[in-house]
Image 1 (tube, rainbow, N blue to C red):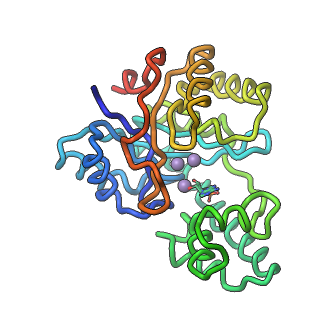
Image 2 (cartoon, helix red, strand yellow):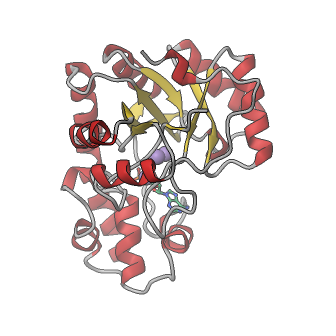
Length: 277
Ligand code: AMP
Ligand code: MN
Ligand code: MN
Ligand code: MN
């Protein structure tokens, strides 16, 4: 049976390994179809593609777009995209421009809470100013002893209501799905179990997502419990959405599920990779 992992990050966004290293690690984990899905950027895909060819595995070109839906941050993965598609590139560039501006506000908010130099500190962990994100702030804060780990920093400083949290407007859901479709890709709702939505809210999100042209939902991902896997398998089926499997790997020591090590999709699911050309 194939081992498919369609959600991973590299140093291009907030992963700890280079694109070629992510591919090599996935291959060691037995993965034979993989997607690199950096946040809001496709700059790692050429390197990943070359590494995948060298290892004889299939790389699905991907991206994970940051979206604001009903005041909630939601992530939409695009799979099988053409990384040179102009509409996608323009959309991603606009989202990245928002990252720099948000990071300045985060640093100001942290400074007001007595933590100076956070912008520069976070930048030391980021590949470029426009890719700066909360994970880079978390690594800076953990390295300067503000909390004992990256997840602990998130809890104390970066979650909603904490000193380093600032509200931010990402791309509209409709636009993100449209950019992915314009690039010939298939839109996947990432890690639905992570959103703080009741069952009615989740129904609205799935309806909107599908009505805008979304095709799939991540059923198996590292932060989903067995119950969530069952629940989203049922919801995918009810909404006519294909099922995806992806670790959301970020790097050694920060992600506890290595690429390819997740449970298989439930047998009832229609796998998204059957729809990828
Ligand atoms: P951003 O897109 O800059 O807001 O950063 C979001 C990223 O932060 C996610 O993709 C995760 O990599 C990371 N993240 C979010 N929440 C947590 C958490 N509680 N613990 C560790 N990492 C987190
Ligand atoms: Mn991330
Ligand atoms: Mn995500
Ligand atoms: Mn991710």
